[in-house]
Length: 460
Image (cartoon, rainbow, N blue to C red):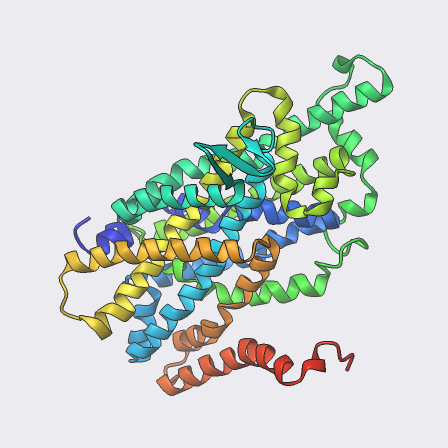
């Protein structure tokens, strides 16, 4: 790592394999199986839409990937600054990115905390969700979050995007393993439980019979993928609305300028990598939903899950994998940590690049050396991770944080689309759009209930 392009873009040398796993890793975090776990357990198969809402957006990546490759910018903020001839607009995009990834990293870190606590509950060194070690009593969730953050800091700060992409390939394999590991074990657990209840030889009930048992135990309405009467979270109009929102907003997700094609060796590598990596996530999402349907049949009355559905995945892994005593619970925790780290390493590098390129260079020291910019990138990367940890500890609600993160990119989304397709779009029009979006989506909903306290409860 010698210069900015090395640290933030890996010198643009990555082919289809690395681009695929980069897109897969950046787009698949520890929050995804946790979110699907919660919503599928509470709403049935329609809960898959908590993550599958990006399904209909994915084919458009074939076109957008080429944009980022052709821009030849290190950050998306560079594009806003050049397109609208406004360094201040690039800095505003940088501020938006800081808030955006505070949400996303907060979601991922919160998910590790929610899953890790039940996974480690049966360990001898854990008492009441606290690790007892060296005379200290440390909360499991917060300790796991800090461990993951520390590991990411070590390799990503040292090696930049190349280190992140190499680890993405390894971590991606673990994410795929996470997506299928519980299915055969869960089916076998259902078959063994059925054999015990009916007093028959377990060998007479095959693992595949677990699917039949699952359908017998779980109400039919739980298998409706759209419009389940038990689901208030994902009616058809909500799926349609969030799909449109995601299609409009995905283009300004800050990491798309890098993992979306900007770091690729060729345009074809950018296209194939972005589409393949994201379709791989769609197939994994199906695995997560099937897993939770099995859990519904096996653990429908579990009181721990009823108290906090965010812990569904962790509790299910502990109860299903634990009896085998083969280290599978530890493997599941490793897989979830890999899912978090693959996203966190990409996000921290993207945001640090924005701070260096769109704040420090234009406003503080435009004549600094490449070595100085790389050093600043490393420093700001560490600060981004610390901010994500703080966000996760402030609000440990995975699905709540996820829904907030969906709406944040709207602030810059239309500015990007109009800037791409209408030459006459101006700097002042862009600023007007950004300010209007902030006012409408964030300022007014926050201020009006303070000014008019009865507004939230007013049925009109």
